[in-house]
Length: 116
Image: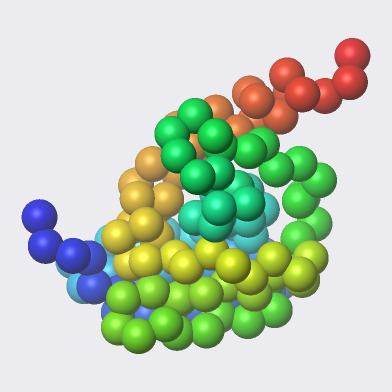
């Protein structure tokens, strides 16, 4: 499969989503919290399989800026100071396609981590 090519990236602060549209017509509305807890940074992903970190307390996180990185990615600057993950077009597409399952897994892990 060829690399996904975005045609539009729109920051919707009031709705708290990043809208990403692709050349093939696919369009995703990715909530800020979802993007933050699935950051491709080492802080969240770790440095290898099984080292992923559950990031909590990001329900109200905002995105201050979307900065292009070459022709292949964007850097999201979150208002909690996090700005180290590069969201490639391929990764944004993956987050869109797998949003329901990834979000459900995050909510399950978040509930397990909650104090009893």
